[in-house]
Length: 333
Image (tube, rainbow, N blue to C red; front, side):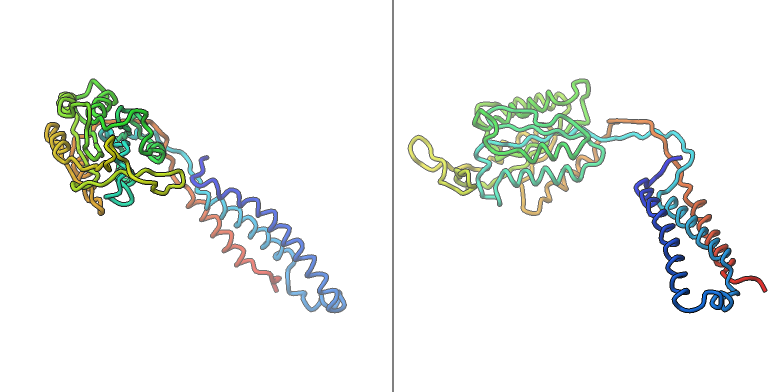
């Protein structure tokens, strides 16, 4: 026998307590009768009551309570083998961790907005595999493709600007890292979501995007930031802003959103570009696009599906209570 909610079986430990309660209740009752008056006289006055029936009713109540606990534990008998299959697409998410993502032209900051967008997208997924790449001057596979969304969000939570040893924003390298993270044999069912301010350096995003297209990867780009630009804050250990990043000439460095590069990347791979907004509507659109894609079988497993049989135990409870009610506690005349 299998139990659907075995935690309720712990309530069986209360049955002995119920038995002890009835025993002490009977002892206490006899003591009160003795205090009330002559036990012989009291017994004659209550001669119509049946001690046997009274005890029998208590036994029925105890048995009914036991079966009620078993009913709550959802007994399951028998079962059949069922094949469960999961269908979806492979989604790689690349997040920019360069220092420019500390800019606060999008509140609370570009990096926090990007992490919030990724977390919201993961919450929407159903059956798709997801992976996370962090990049700055180089790239790192933070979380390989997985169906464990909790693990993916755990890796997401530790992402911070400056975590990559090499500074910069190598978008082309991030795309190439994503290509390596996908299954080589397939030419479809692949999506790359790229979140960055678009200020690419030292790599050729267009060339990497053409490689991605050959592998059947569709790239959706999300621009994090504003066109007018924002200085890059220097964050102290206490979390306060201690100033702003400056160039060799002493001028404050302004970081601007490069929409043109991100639009070009998306266009090459038949994807789409979105600018991050406070409402996050761009995520809904990307998720809708992914849902329209052809799905592949990502996993399958054989499991036993049990059938509930709590109805029989509940029926026993009702029968016992009806019998207890019909027996009563009076002797037959």
